Length: 132
Image (spheres, rainbow, N blue to C red):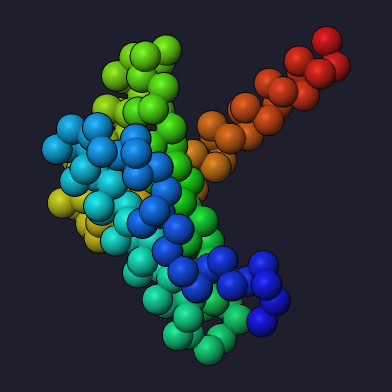
């Protein structure tokens, strides 16, 4: 296994943004724990499945969980400039839909949504700024 693949065999969110997370409200902590559990679950699946197709799916889920966790920590850390709405919206999206289906699946789907919409929009904004 390559060195780049080893990053999918450990949980990175457990230590990410610890200082920022110490200021979380209880609802933010609960949502982050849901995200962390989803990441740990995907990491465990990645480590144990023998087939490439299943490993690819688990790898994607690890990335999606990390996107959601990263956005939650970063929007909370920048609430002085962004206000409370971005982090609170992420928390609401995680908590409000978790009861309807698997909490981990909610996190993975939300991470995929963020990748598809928000990150790509930011990329195109950067490209536009560079070309302008």
